[in-house]
Image (cartoon, rainbow, N blue to C red; front, side, top):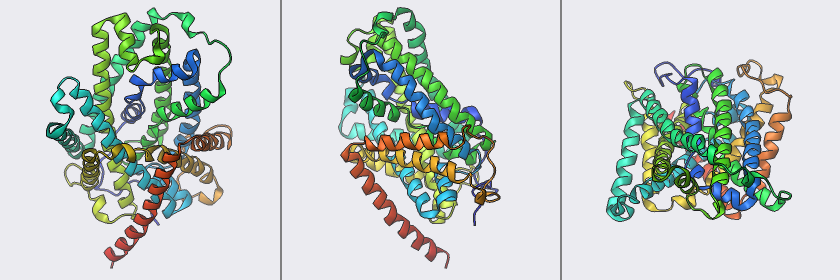
Length: 439
């Protein structure tokens, strides 16, 4: 039996990531392109209640993140939710979680790389379609792949810079805009409409998603059992403050926010002029680029973890002897993302991400509860961080995730079911391949 709490074998991945590096990975994945566009959707649904709802969903997300923090504090290896599920519920359930994590990262990368190409095409129209657009996508994915192969420290350095590059324009937007807020626009009128509350709440919970990737590269962290809980909690705290204040400024400065397609840029134009709108546009480019880096890093480590734990053929777990990075996993993840990006099918495949996130949330929170049982003493390490309140927080987190599942659209449920079935088929094929490999 492979101990899920054991460090990766000597000579594999290099431990370079600190707690703030993991935090940057989390913030980068949660604060994506949505923050630049969705404030208008929240305002259209619940009006002046929207900042309060953003803050409330941040607290709800913290319940899930706290469960991640406790179970993550037991492990030191690569894989995150896949490792937790493997220890608590066995190989097949874990494979489904790992497969869904990896596939949605590749599909999301394909979607986000197209968003980046579209943003650049605004300035260079020739990049909007045809061979030039395809060439741009190839170059971008190749560059990100090369950085990932070169080393985790290099990947982390670039990711940290991109995270700072996306946060600075938003922080300037908040710091300047807060002095122009018309507080009368922040006063809710009447009761909060329940139908809109449900729809907007679900939209926000997905907007807060992405922090589940934080524990995935734990096998490359210096002190994962302490760094992972810190990064999870800090990510949600930072994101909640930033998203809430962004909504306050957008709502309080932009008349007709609900009808804006580019709410942050339009609001910045009002109180900072053209330079403000340009700053927000630059932030959006940094945001999508950083998200691409994060998808590549976490997606490849998901694939590597499956091979490292013996659930995929060993070739997927091959580590470069000099760079100490999972080269095969990086190349396969990049190749799949490239094919999806060029095929134009990434939007349909990205539907799986909603269901995948819910599966990961439920599996991780259930693992938090299950691994507390005395039967696991000696099989997994004791936690360095324990969520207060006994079973309340993990149980409440599971209820929140199931409520999200109940609100998923039919097409999302169908896409998720197909992905789960595909995972079962791949599991059988992988087990057979591993069996032949070992003969």
